[in-house]
Amino acid sequence: MNTFGKKSFLRKLKSMLTVDFKRMFTMPLIYIMAGVCFAMPILILVMTTMMGDAEEGAEAMGTFTNVWQAIGSVSGAGMSMDLTSMCNINMLYFLVAVLVCIFVADDFKSGYAKNLFTVRSKKVDYVCSKSLVCFVGATIMFVAYFIGAMIGGAIAGLPFTTEGFGAGGVIACMLSKIFMTAIFVSIALCLGTVAKQKLWLSILCSFAAGMLLFTMIPMISPLDSGFVNVVMCLAGGGLFAVGLGAVSNLILNKTSLV
Image 1 (tube, one colour):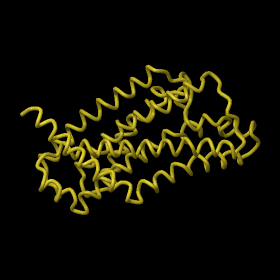
Image 2: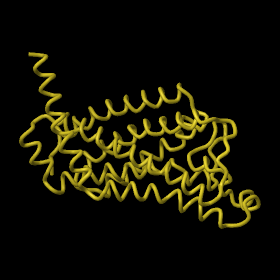
Image 3: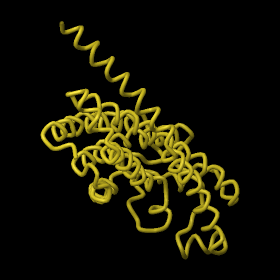
Image 4: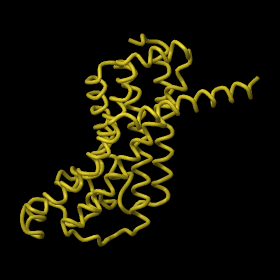
């Protein structure tokens, strides 16, 4: 009976994933978000290089002098308030929260969630499916930003030289940042189940929660990241997904679906 139960859950999860993936990739939301993430670094890198001379502008205004600054900074650089530290890939974590909140709120506004939970009494497959699908959506957004940063850097004429890190560090940095999206996905999903149809409330609360973790991102996923950083971000994302997923499941079971 236990084996049958596990197969039944996996079958339900597979069915839910199929529906959620179809909904995500037939909605314009993911394409709009990916397009914004792609265009953002191009505009930032090109526009900042037009502020003045490459060297004088960089010293006076803190503009980008290297393409990789759009991805992050090396460990030990600290958290400064200049342009390069505020306008890099870490901004995407807030866009990921917007993606999740809109996706979840749409379920409750359209009545999809109520119809779904009428047929399926258990909410755990819904939470698992939403977490996995939104994580894939977040990964697409980060990859789109990375491609846009490379193109924007080439257009702006910024150097691709690496100082204090190598290609392996950049790959580990990107993997670490992608795995960390699971943390922000689980936070936004949990708050989305609380706010339900109130999209503004879920986004506002997700931004507030994200700000508490934002300063830790450069320290956990620097450009000179290694295997330890990747494993740490993977473990952290998994723990948050499981822990807050359980909280989301409890909220759905204990609260009204409207």
